[in-house]
Length: 362
Image (cartoon, rainbow, N blue to C red; front, side):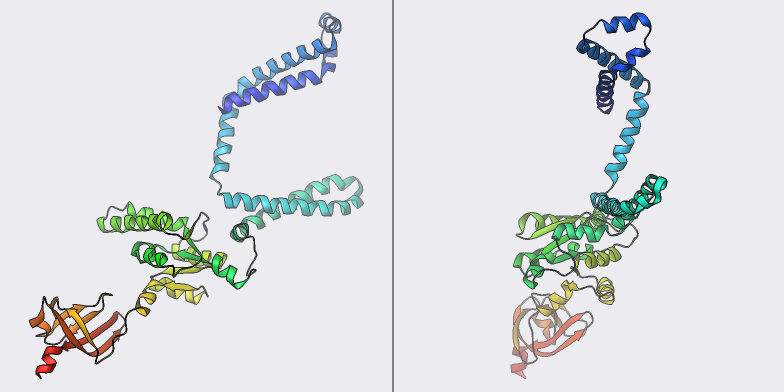
């Protein structure tokens, strides 16, 4: 296809060249020059256009394969450049060239060196603009998406536009879909492309557990994007100078002025150290657990033996473990227990209780 279009372009270029350069007939031998002179101007122009087209097509055919292959490589190279880098580079280059136009009037003082100085200044400022644009590509990308710099906009607008950036662990966890469904998370859910790539690698793992976790994460994303009434944005940019996914998430949160949603303890600490807001799903889960106080009576199902003699173990709906003293005799039954104490540990909360019937007997 490229070769065909280049052939058409070369033919049109040769035809135009022949049509507009009738003075070339003066270089022809006398018999041909006299023959052209006897023609009408229109016919001679058309004949020269035809000759020019044939000659250009013939010359192009000699280098057609090399030229078309080179152009295909250029197209592939340009296609591989991410759109945000292309737009940022174009913006910076344009700004640099416009700045050089403002400097040009001053260069008139250089006299004969004016044109050389104009070329040098334009090249220098254009290159500087290109490099600055590429360095600021993430900020420019954020500006093109929101139309605002920095913290502009009212508080209500910022709240509606605020970005919640999901990390890999919270996607695989799956609870984020239910939280989004309840409407507790406002703004735009951002799924970075580098997180998607990490999920894809996990889903393609040879380890069965990892593969299932990765596929679960992809299913959760599909549910969020298609089934929930919430705005989702796939962030296509990347930070090639940063290798760690967690560090990329922190950088992205700073660029978008958003919040990282995670259940990763280490990422939580890194975000706090760098001044990035974090929404930790585990903290939310602990915050919404029902409060149980010593002396309260609750209904539980004792399901197994405890570590100590005579103990039974039950669980609340949120997964909180209840150790029932003397509960071994109640395994498999639903019984009413009296809470005796509540222990909060780094691993979570543990409740100690004893059967109410046993309490009454005593």
